[in-house]
Length: 216
Image (tube, rainbow, N blue to C red; front, side, top):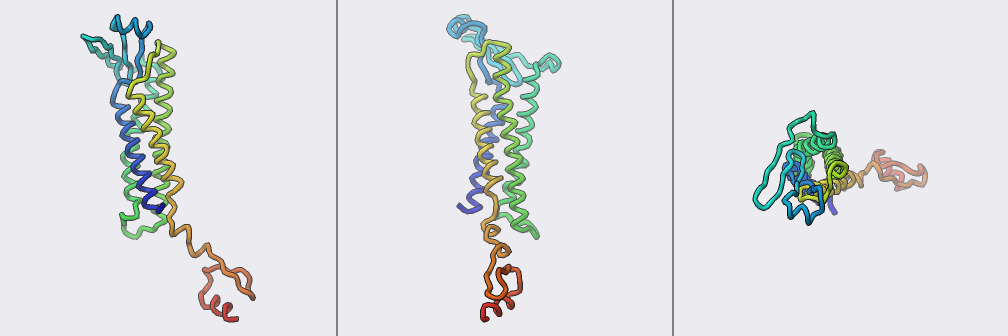
């Protein structure tokens, strides 16, 4: 697989994963809670959904949400999950823009292949950081809810965060580990030639001296 294909695969996975993280951050159906059993809660219309920003009561005739804007009263796991998810959402756009600039088809003035490779690796590290933020938030949040309320099930926002974090992890890994240029892997500086009189010589030595040793 060529370097362009690897960069494109990493970019697409990271872009879709970042979209999933944004969806998870902006929606509030992270977990479904209830003080009683699921059957009893459905009868009494006491199912609740909790997210980063609101708590909502679900019933057949009512859908009422309460904003979680009392910063001093919000539990630590919610505040930390908010900070991590917002950070992941903000880091996604500049990192993906740098991936596009690392593509071989994009040429900047006086830019070498080594510079593009370093830029791609940097983008991969940032995307791995985005994945780490998403994973910590989407795992810590339901654990925190479980200690407070009777956790019944996970919501689609949490699943979106898990899928987005996983895709960002794979995309960042591809960008970090597989961004080395094919031409750099076969760099002339790494080639060695054997001479009967001079032993092993580097190809960086003058061509004329190598030619002379070959004729001898």
